[in-house]
Length: 126
Image 1 (cartoon, rainbow, N blue to C red):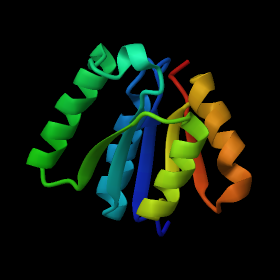
Image 2: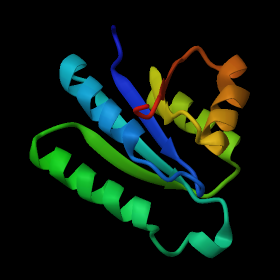
Image 3: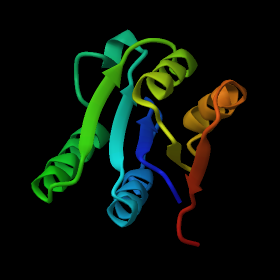
Image 4: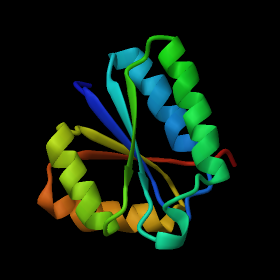
């Protein structure tokens, strides 16, 4: 797999870090850079971090201490537009989302026709 830039997007309804854990494991194997993108298009949530965002930041800090290439970004526009812009700007090869995160699954599906990109949906354990 020639993945170099992995995007892990989170929306306001995201509730799991499974996609980030999966991206970290993959990035270690292929020496990829991870981009974590929180999409905060609701004005009432733009100024404060959610518990998921705080947990994510802790994971990113730990990964950086392990010398993994990880960056954290916040976008406040429309989800699909922000994803598309970010994918093109950062040359993203792969998106990792949690299966069942309907907001992110829908947004990724909506931009798929406009970009050539791989998508991994991380399933929970059954």
